[in-house]
Length: 222
Image (cartoon, rainbow, N blue to C red; front, side, top):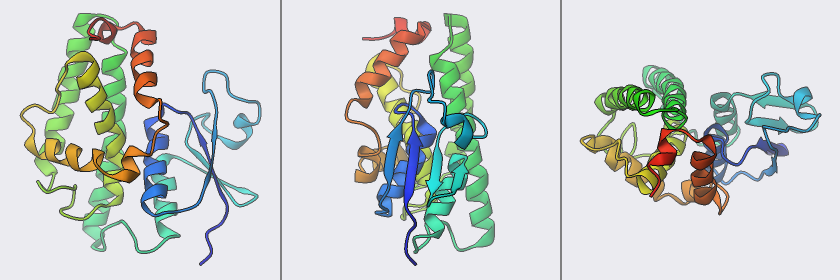
């Protein structure tokens, strides 16, 4: 089956866009990418994005997909072999935990945007609790389901990249005492599809974002 022309609408710092890019790169799917500034989006963006969010994937001349998990699955389905488990229950559980991953990413945003130490500590406790639940259901091998990379791994890699940067910049190790997640993070961050899923200046942009937010995390910058 011939892959249709794909154009990904992106914001350079968005973890949900990164999920899609990892999937595209891992499956070696040709695509174009258009970067926008979500704080000052072009007029045409409102016409293609029902929720005013990225990622948006233009498929061919007319179709537009939104929501990162949906886009991931579409890319996977048009480029066999599938990165989803064959067993229906395992596949459903993966979908559920991909949804959970989106909530963890938002909890991390709550941490880095917390305005004072009390709010930061509360957000850190919430995020740590969510990570502990993830630790409990992880396979303990390199990837979520075991030894093979799956779509759920692409969904969580952006979180681990940001946790790693938060550790480097602010001295926070939120994976301390979570050996399964530590192994998972190391395996994911070593993958070429993950390394190349962000722009070259992403580490500097992430640090600048922490500074610009002006929250408690900015006071921890080293």
